Image 1 (cartoon, rainbow, N blue to C red):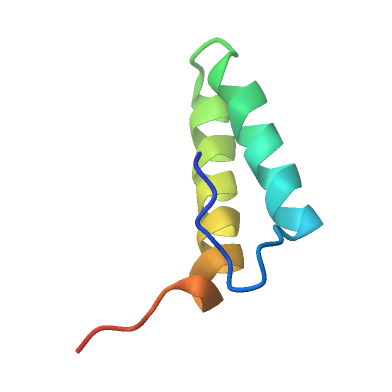
Image 2 (tube, rainbow, N blue to C red):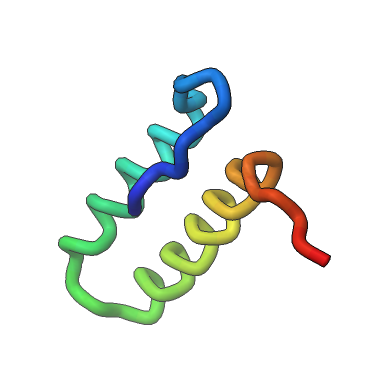
Length: 57
C-alpha cells in the first residue's frame, strides 16, 4: 500500500513492517486465514496513519 506523506518526511518502522507484511500476504494463496490476516493488517495500517489524516467537517 502506498505510504501517505508525513509532515516530517519519515515513515515509522511499524508502518514499514505492516506494509511489508501486506505485500507478502498479497502473494499468498487465497484462504479464509489470509482474508482474516489481511483485515487485521489493514486495521493496523489505518490505526498507524490515523494521525496523518486531516479531519473533515
